[in-house]
Length: 323
Image 1 (cartoon, helix red, strand yellow):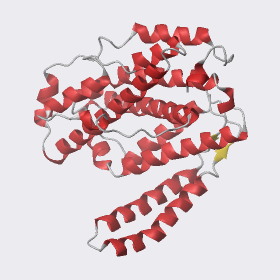
Image 2 (cartoon, rainbow, N blue to C red):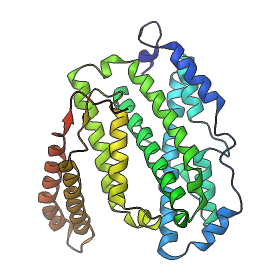
Image 3 (cartoon, rainbow, N blue to C red):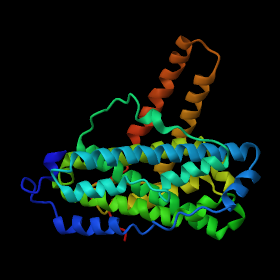
Image 4 (spheres, rainbow, N blue to C red):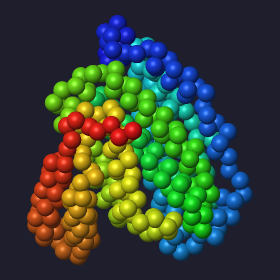
């Protein structure tokens, strides 16, 4: 990782661009935006029954995801401190914690439900898995951009349909998503500084692979939690497809190849994966002995792999720059 950001070894590093990004992160546009008020606790007290549990799960998942990103950025900032102080400082600023940051904001949200989340398990006795830098860049860029489209879509929907605004945290999603967008732009700059990650046939294969992995994972996970999206007035599958299409269009600006997610057959394949995944979950929750469960899972796993592999066919090797 360190060698990629050595300005003497890598002449593709655009130091002016990174300096500009650093100033933007230092400005910290959202430092005064995430301010709680009594409406949070009042709204939490009104949420009862299944909807209350759904929101608790949403807060827990979101908080864990934010903290995982904090750990990644903190580690990268530490490793690059001597090699490239500017890039290292950007990573450190992305990992900063203060009362107004989204992670802290989410944690405070759990207290509205009389709960506390111990995130120590993510740092205690942890095992590190090595990933090549390009994999981190592809995956994190997509994660940040898909996060932006998820947050801004929910924000716009609830602004237009305030009757579904059951908890105040959603009112902050417009500011929140801009942080995600800036993080994604930073990783876009990192990718451009490493043309070997973008300019050959392997780059096309890997960018398609990560697009597919991120889109399928989100779609399958969200379809297991339709109650959450229905609770705020959204159709889960329509929401996901909108997010996937917009993320794919954005990714086409930097990735050498993306998927043709606007082909109707792509969505049909996603829906078939949802059906197969539901059957796998049912087998896992059945009372059968483990051996029988494993035998029942084999054809289902094979069918899921087949659908995933077939989805790679929906590729555009020359991405369309939509806007």
